[in-house]
Length: 138
Image (cartoon, rainbow, N blue to C red; front, side, top):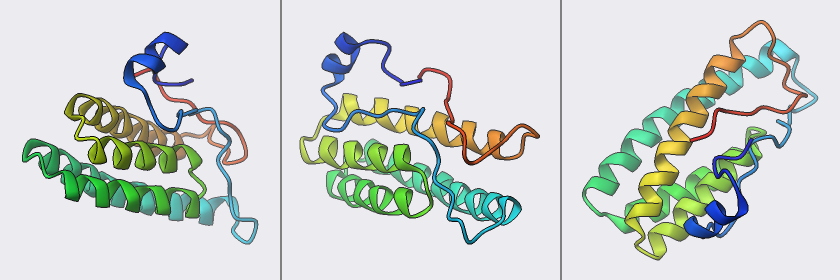
């Protein structure tokens, strides 16, 4: 499920790269399911610290920092199998370049909600990294 409810909502936020949270997670085949869960859990906890940095940078209107953090999130997300996280990062980067504080606040809030959802999902007994993951709408 996407954070924007409809195409018109997407147009309102003018996302450079549409985010589809139902995109399947990609698990590296060299890891067992349990090993992957450990790595994903570690990565998502690191991203929680990044979210705090994003919130501080937004409060200070530090667009350069927001741009750099967005680019880092974009690069890291796919490396850990989270395509949707990469798209959040790219959208944060573009919004920072455009100095769009409203869109940045929205994206950071949704990104925070999505990563918390994934953390909970990873520890649920129903978690399967080969299935699609979706979060509640932002």
